[in-house]
Image 1 (cartoon, helix red, strand yellow):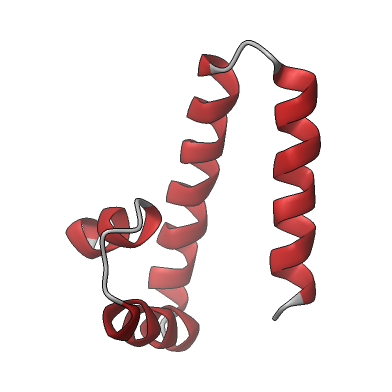
Image 2: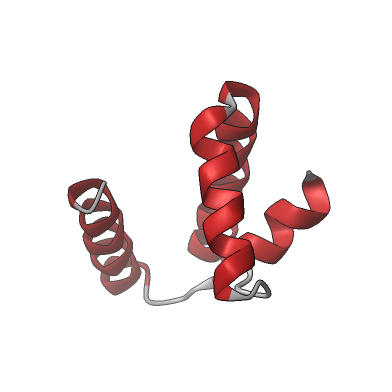
Length: 71
């Protein structure tokens, strides 16, 4: 799971692998929790490492809202 999760987050999966993994996440509550935990951690790491945090915050909020609206 961890290896697949990191490959998904970092865009290292083929489109077929992403589709399969997305379906697995939707079906498995534990995977879904781990996915969101990892995704949140990556967002916090991005936040800490970027100097222009105001623009990043707006960008990440926009990306998050887009993902919510596309579900």
